[in-house]
Length: 610
Image (cartoon, rainbow, N blue to C red; front, side):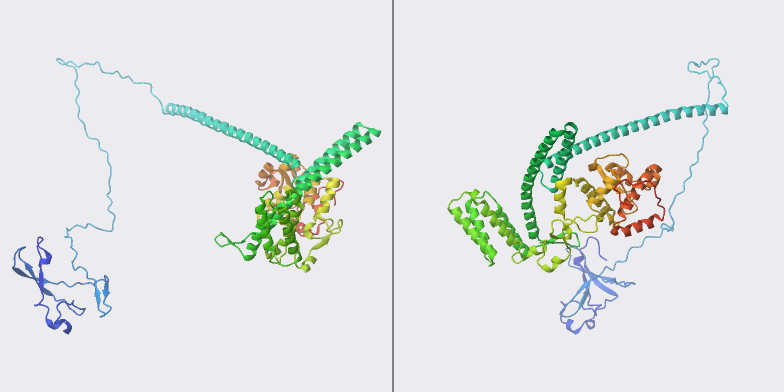
């Protein structure tokens, strides 16, 4: 034991008395500087010399008793000498924790130390005294009050008065509640009217925008649909003029007016033809660039994490190089030096392959360079440049020179593949792939190709199928969202849908009789079953959204309306029953209805197939 004011470094242990030299190993007897190894055993008592004062040279011997621990010391880490293999463990303190004195009271226990309290009211006595007026003492009665007993109220009267008070409170509360409800209804009505006004304005803007686009498409036609609208408008104009001439004129005047109308129609057809030639030229250049861009696109695939990986191959790089050259030689109004550089690049590219086509391209390139050196006008070089572009495009479409194009060509390089899915057009007598024929659902043969059908429509009927195609596209998108493997809607063509809309549904909504086909859509009558011509209804977009929210249309509509819809379904079923591909779907629908379908004895209109 040392004092608090003493330095522990000033103490030293006299181990000569308790640690004999026989306990040390032979290699440690003459090496006092080495540490004691693991075979050392601590004695029970040691003697420690303590310096008496800070500046004193005398020491005092103190005997210290070593207490043996009664538990196994934990391993606190250490290190090992890799040369001698001796292990050294970190030591722990031998201080015994201090024990708290026993107070004789149980301080800690497993039971909760909850204090139970109880409140009890007590009224203590309060002694008070009153002072009255008497002889020799005057007490003022100025602040005194005179209290007289009132009318006695029975329990029945008390409860009646309480009931009247409750009725008054309820009346005021109900008035407040009704006022809030009316205010909310007014706000909802205001919001509804604002929403209806916005919807009406939106519909009006959409209609104006649609008319503007249609007018723009008629003024600047570019696609097949635009020219269909143009020819349809021409036919409507011709019919109106013919009716007016037949109604107002007779004899020779009528024949002269019809001849003038025929001349005007011929002039308009010629004007439409000129627009068509210009549009075909523009579309041809766009198709060529789209074709070359498709060849030059890198390989793409989606990884497991959704990221798109792109890779360029030697074939895609080759296609990209040819695309850049084609764009360069197709450009107009470029300086002469840049044009010569582009032509020389093209010449080096085609010179790698020896054939008749490349020799012709190189001859044309040399001719153009020679003419440009002679300062020939560019307007006289347009034909030569078009020939170079055309021949170079043929060069690009050859799989030997551009291997990437073999996967995109419509005509496969292998002649044996041409014998598959090839049919003969009965009109133009050309052999075309099956994709070039518009095959309706009730057709038994391929018939005429699309080009012949389009030419016949432009020359005779001049009908437009744009609205039917739009309805069919919307129908296919909606059916794809159901994800129930619908098939019938993808078998129908626009001719079938046109018959369904015009003949069966009369080109109008089943509910509101709206005849604007741009605003009409076809949806399922019973959304639990697949769409089919006998499970459909023609409605506007807003009506279709409300119809699809119904759980059971049999309970939502009146019986007269349901009978009318079922009559149209039976008509459609009788018309499409002759189609072989529809036979399995008809049998399946009949099994779903379980024989609950009934027939309506209503004659079909003329022209309907039964």
